[in-house]
Image (cartoon, rainbow, N blue to C red; front, side, top):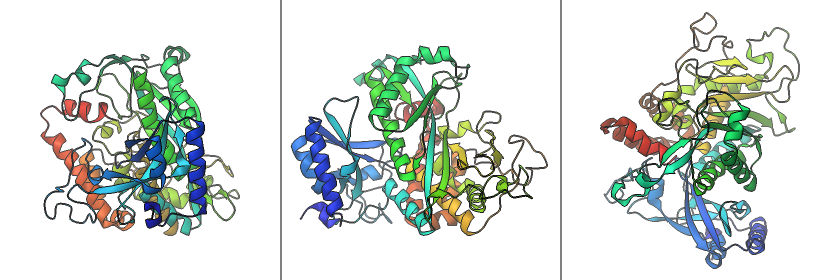
Length: 497
């Protein structure tokens, strides 16, 4: 019996997908296949199999040490796996046992930067054939299933800011006498000097690395719309067309890990760290555009069917449907509890500054880039959507999107009403004075809101909240005990993210 049979996955559709996958391996003259899995921090872990054994692993899977699910952001195991009770509440873990990665044969891709190499997306299963509930992709699948039971699907558009640098010296990174845990990054220089938003001259200056990003994204089949030079030095932005949420999350994982690898081969260092460790720099955000699809008629559930005569421009239902207003209100209500999943690194909280095109308070605005939530679209507009500007580009996309589903769905089911839109997202004016709660402005505050939230435990489960909190407390404790906080962020984030 194949492992996939034990997992209950064998059916005609999967067998057809396996046959199509095998055919592509042969047509592409593949020599090795990466069996990749997205960890809790959003980075990919991979086992590379040679062709003959990869073909077998389509049904049998490949073993992976379970401690990879228990790592904090430094790659240290945050649970005492070799002590009795060290993984309390984490059934199926302990003693460094194995889990099995089972690939999705439909996910096969030829890596544009690695000759004769293919890639398969995997999810983690216990050896008894039960799914690993802490697999973050599975968490989003559960959230989407809940959303589907209410008659909706989520569609997301990605707008990702990040930084690219030219590597000038790798001696500190690769010198064995300087090895450390976490490791050091390479020495770098800018690819453009910044402070000239959308400058054509700067775009031309960094054409080589941007072409690598373009060809990587398109070679992976991602729906890339545009690449732009952002305001900050060496800062760029990639924008993707909307996709169903699970696909969009997969795209983020592929894009982020793919461009880092492709650029590194060409002598560049890409980082999705929010605020790189240099004096004159601009923070990067991940703006998540989202709308619901009514499954019954495949229409945008946020679009108003008719003009609401008594609604002014500051009212949510001026352009959003009642469903859209409820979703908006839910995102506002649960913003504090979800912040940690949207901005999961200590470094990310340096972004929440006034007048920086980043949010500071829990407010919404109509096409307002200073507000946390930006409502986009006119009256009776099929492109009506909500852009959440709370996230950082290092966020795990599956957790980020799951948090949005649960928050927005609560607003819909509870028929919550949104406050008036803000006109002054960084000020204290009468129209936003009562609604302007602050976003948690430190990692510690966001962690406290997350782990003490009964609503979070209801949505994500007691075990997950305890598990994720344990990982993040380990990160916080190391930061607070670091002799050099800046060096901590350099090694923890700039080297790895």
